[in-house]
Amino acid sequence: MSRPWLLAGGMLVGAALAVFYIVRVPETAEPATDAVAWVNDRPIFRASYENALQAVAGDRKDGTLRQDDRERVLQRLIDQELLIDRAIELGLHERDPQIRNQLATAMIDFLVRRAEDDAGAADEAELRAFYEEQHFRFERSPQYRVAVEGGAVPLPDGLLLAKEIEQRLGPSAARKVAELEVDESAVIGEGGGQYTVRLLERRGGTPVPFDEARDAVEAAYLRAQSEAAVREFLEVARQRTDIRVEAER
Image (cartoon, rainbow, N blue to C red; front, side, top):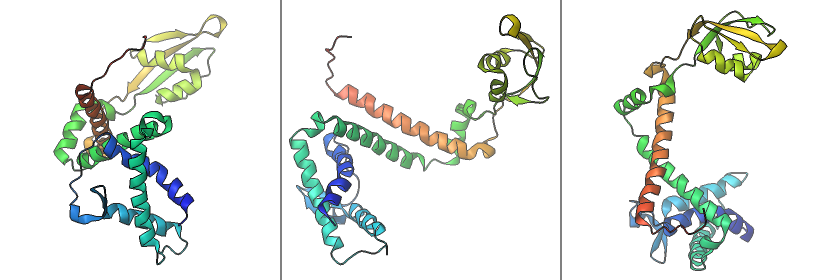
């Protein structure tokens, strides 16, 4: 395991780990007895160690570890902690734009993963409640049957999605059709390029049944919980932080 692997492999991971110390994220509930080493009273947990070993084995053609890999990986993790400590002492997280962006991204990823873990335990009742509250997310797309008179290319006889109308007649016509009531007409275009569209039938806009949309409901629920977790963190952080805006606006 070479020094370039140590530096390249540890750079982004190191930035992510530094988040836990810079923004003072609460410690996990992992027991101290599960640590494989300590650096300045901070544990290196066995889970992190095992994940690093798996990554090394995965890079090998035979998928196995060499005799000295375990010691080398442990020393790499210790080196990583030492580098992070020194980087923080030097204030690199305050001056280096790349590190600042990596830290912000890592913090968002941490909040999202934690929220997804919590939301993943949602029961059927919670998902159904979310579905009822956010039913508009799970509606079938409206379909239209439209007659065209004038110079435009005729539309196929049958129900079409708005995007299909847009592909054939353009975005202006698609928007106008969506605004029409059944049996209403509208003139599209100007001069010799004018034509008329008449809405003959409209279907859709009704919610997909819960059982049919369950996977989409669960995905939307996880996304909503993740977004809420990030917003909540920022709101609390703003309340607890002295923020002064002095730049001209």
